[in-house]
Image (cartoon, rainbow, N blue to C red):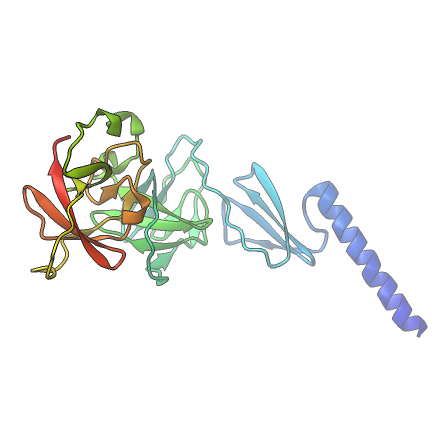
Length: 261
């Protein structure tokens, strides 16, 4: 009995000491250090894990909590990742349409924030993030519940989200045949949702694209697969012409009319 009480006393003392050490030194007393990340310091303790993100922000987490260090953009070098020999830079865009859960790969190593990745599956903002290969030179990285869009240097200027170069919806002319507040862009054309209900037998060919990028609702989309209406995300584009397009979304087909920007 005395031996059991002694063991319990020692365990209680270890718990108190470990918790006190975390509170004072922001690191568990009894911990293993994760050596796989060159940027963020992670210590796995008995009851708490401690992550020092980018050597600047410290997070104390209960054991088993899931957490990924946020990407800091206050660096001399843009957040970027190398995949299959290509560098992808963060555009500031978030891809919000629903997708399958299958990943194409994972970022397994990282450099310092002010350095450029030099090998595949390496970033300068941390490791452990899954990614999916997108279209037109893009990669989408899953971080803290969101899909961040990265673009190759060739198309980065086109995809970077700079709202100062976007038109406002209020500047568009009003139309009697379409709702100019519900828009998407495709092939350098702008389409608005028609008020008309159509009798549509179905597409004559496979889809020409899918709505993928979302901007604030008060702005006019300007690049391929971009919309200002969250409900259109994931919509499939069919039968595109100079004057109209069909969008399949929410289980039904809708007519969209081309409008001048």
